[in-house]
Length: 83
Image 1 (tube, one colour):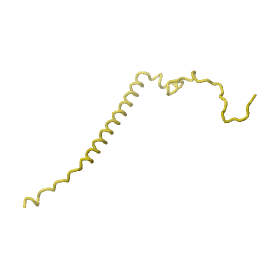
Image 2 (cartoon, one colour; image 1 turned 90 degrees about the horizontal axis):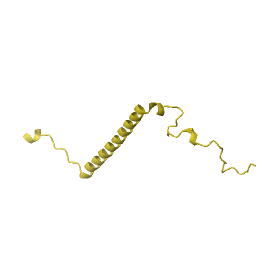
Image 3 (cartoon, helix red, strand yellow; image 1 turned 60 degrees about the vertical axis):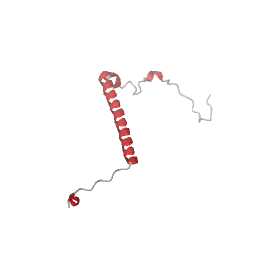
Image 4 (cartoon, helix red, strand yellow; image 1 turned 45 degrees about the horizontal axis):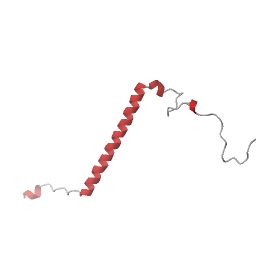
């Protein structure tokens, strides 16, 4: 009668499934770590250089408008040559 009241054992997972789950967890942890590093570096830079980063004169890339040339460039698709 004791065997009727016992809970049945869960079947064991194959090794390939367990390995796939471990690999997926490792990839998720690595991605989470990189996202946390990005957030931390952004908050650190905002704390230290708030005026520089939020200045509308600066490009988000850090390259100002002084390095670009304002001379027009010839259109390569234009077939008629202007004199």
